[in-house]
Amino acid sequence: AIDMSLSKAMLLEPLAVNINTASAEEMAESLKGIGIKTAEAIVAFRNDEGLFTSPEAIMAVKGIGDFTFEVNKDVIMVE
Image (cartoon, rainbow, N blue to C red; front, side):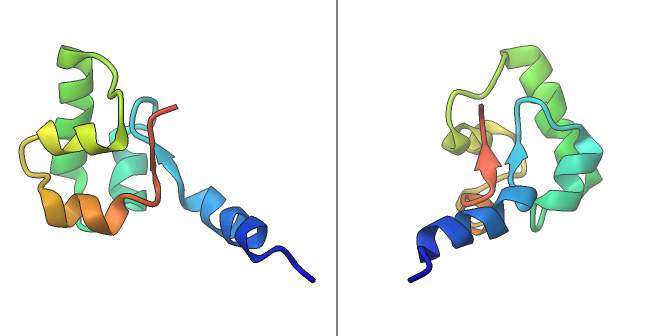
């Protein structure tokens, strides 16, 4: 039998984005509902406030609310 959780993780892997290291362009491409302006705000926030400690911390960025986090939470990584 194929371990489905493993194959699912492999499918998700290329889509995962580390919000502590990704460029604004990478985030705008990888995250649903996040355009270049919001992605640039994420980078600016990271530069001002330091690295994100959890995926949820992205919601502190202006323009990112519960809904945007919910649709992206499976691909957001912080390490």
